[in-house]
Length: 129
Ligand code: HEC
Image (cartoon, rainbow, N blue to C red; front, side):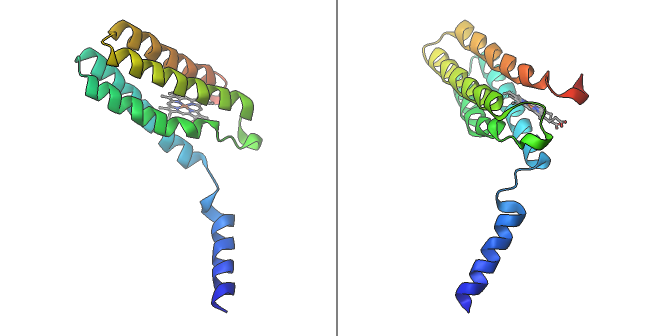
């Protein structure tokens, strides 16, 4: 009996929230990425490596979410989103490498590359145009 109850509970969870990544989740992750980007910029400007590295870590953590794309409601494809997510993570690594070796210009260049990835997707959002 207990087993059945658990199965019913688990099925309920699966159907409701556990795997349903919705608009509210997306907005939350987008806002986390925005905060991470601000932190990176701040760290570069204040010459504070730790702040840059913390920002990079946060950016990596939330960047995965970019590739979760419920096709029916999105204006871009899953493969496009996956590419953007991979690029963001790749440029995040570059920011890290550059700031660790004291190259602020290099870090700033890759920061700008990340921003480019954000914008290239945002440009596809119809209601934003
Ligand atoms: C593959 C697509 C995609 C990429 C890449 C992407 N975003 Fe977004 N972003 C969205 C979508 C979709 C929304 C929601 C737009 C809406 O419905 O209002 C959004 C919204 C936002 C918002 C507004 C949140 C709010 O409160 O309304 C911010 C801030 C944001 N993104 C930051 C970023 C940052 C920073 C990056 C890059 C590091 C990024 N996004 C990359 C698709 C993307």
